Image (cartoon, rainbow, N blue to C red; front, side, top):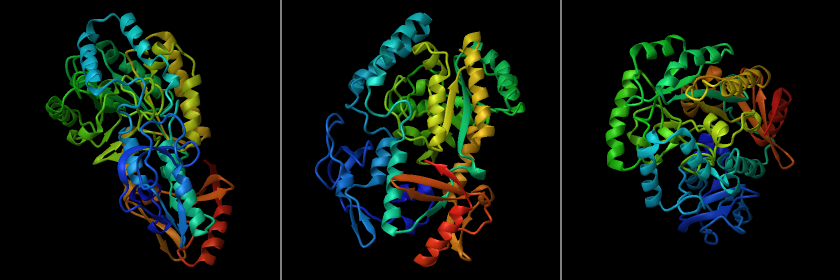
Length: 478
C-alpha cells in the first residue's frame, strides 16, 4: 500500500489492507465503487477489455476480516497504470493504431511550419471534434486516482473504528490548494512579448515560469534569460526544437534528451515540458530534470489523447510530474472559439474543491492580440482573488517541486500524547484529519501546528483526542 501511504503521508497503521498474492490474467477495466473506473489485474472475475457497457464493481468483492480489508486487486498497480496512461492503447475511439498514429504525427510535424494558421486550426478542430463524447478520462477534470485513494481512506476509517485519521496536509502553511502559471514560448514574436507578459503577471503579484525552445525556433540570448531571472520568473526547457518528433523513436529521443539536458544545465532550469504535450513516461528516466509538466489530467483537447487521471503531483521514477489540469489558452481560444472564462473557472473551482494543483498554460505567441490578452488578464485576476479569499498557494513550479519532495520525506509520528511531523520543512507542514460525515469524506486542518493532535495510544484515547482536535480545526469539505 505504498502509493496510498505516499499520497496521504499517514502512518502505516492506517492502511489496514491485504492485497491479493498474485492477481491473474491480463489487465482490463473494472469499477471500484460508483463511477470510479480502474485499469489493472484482479483476483475476481476477469476484467473487461473495454469500458463500454456494465463493468463489474470490485468493491462488492472487498471483505473485512479482523479489522483488515482483503482487496481483490492491487490499488498501487491500478494507480500506476492510470498515471502512466497504460489504459490508452486500443481503447479510445479517437486513437488509431500506434504505427499509424506515429506516422501521422511525424508527417504533420514536418509540414506544420509551412501550413497557414487557418489550415492548421482546421486540422486541429477536426481532431478534437466530438471530444465531449470520450467517456474516459472524465472531462473537464479527471480525479480517478484521487478518488481511489479517498475510497481506500473511507474503508480504513470503517475498519479501524476511529472517528478520524491523521495525515500530512497536501500543501504548506495549510493552503487549500496550489496554482502555477506557465508560459510556453514558441516563436520569436512570443519571445519578444515576454517582457510585457511579465509585467502583466507582476501587476497581480504573480511570478510565472517560461518554457524556452532551445533550438531552431528563435535565438535564446543571455540577455533574454537574464531578464527573466532578474525579474523573479522561472526558466525551463520546452522540448528541443518543438517539431513534434521528440518521441518518434527511442534512439532519436535519447539523442535529443542528451542535448535537452545540456540546455537545462546551461539555463539553470529544473523543469521540462515537451512540445505539443507529447509524452512517453517509460522514457522519462533519460531526462535530467527535477520535474516535468507534460501530462494533462484529461487530454481531450490535446494531440495525444489520454491523461494521468489525477490533480496531484506524483513521481515517475526520480522525476516529479506536475500535471496540466486546465485547458491551454490555444485550445480555448482557437479550437473551441471561447474567449470567456467559463471553462477555466469551472475547472479551477473543481480543483480548489478537490485541494488539487491548478496548472495553467498560456502562450505569449497568442496573447499579443487584445481579445486573448483580456481573457488572460481576467484569469490572472481570478487567481489573485482565490489567493486572498480561498487560501490558494499561488507559486512557481519549482516551489511546488521542492515542497512535494520535502513532504514525501516527512513522517507523522506519535510523541507525548500527540502526532508530530518529522523531516525537513516540517515547520511549513500541517496535520490534517480525515473523517466521515455519512458517505462524505471530510478533511479538517489544525489551525496551529503546535496544538496537540490525536495520540498514538489506545482506542479510547484515540477517540477523545480526535474529537477534541476536530473542534479546534478548520473544516475543508472534499
